[in-house]
Image (cartoon, rainbow, N blue to C red):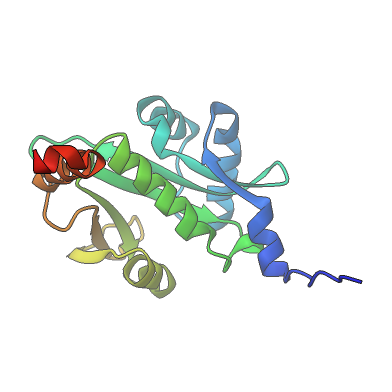
Length: 191
């Protein structure tokens, strides 16, 4: 007689939540999640602009057909410094502390790196948001780039944080691709 061990509620929640690319049908639910979770809110047209411009960068966490978290991300296309930027990330209180924000961020990072070949991702975070700063630094590998005074509408300062996808810069991409091609065909290495 075999009795499978029961999964903890945390494990069960993780298995049921799907991280996927957002669609136009998700935008209202993303906005609702934002309004419930964060003091910085955006008009619907801002979500639509992100979706139309950088569709691969918007990710949602879906549990049983309901949106329980999202990441709103984009590409900053300034001359000389193009890079990915996390505009907003939020997870409903009922689904916090199970790693969803980390999974959402990693999914957006993958799109920035693989689709847009971004050298790094940036974000702004309130200096008082110690929990988010911990996740960004200790789990996702962000570093504080600088402090921006009075960044938020209420006057609070923000940290501009950055996470580089490659340690040696953008030239490393070609070097890694060349190494991958040579290792895929060992005969060329010797020949």
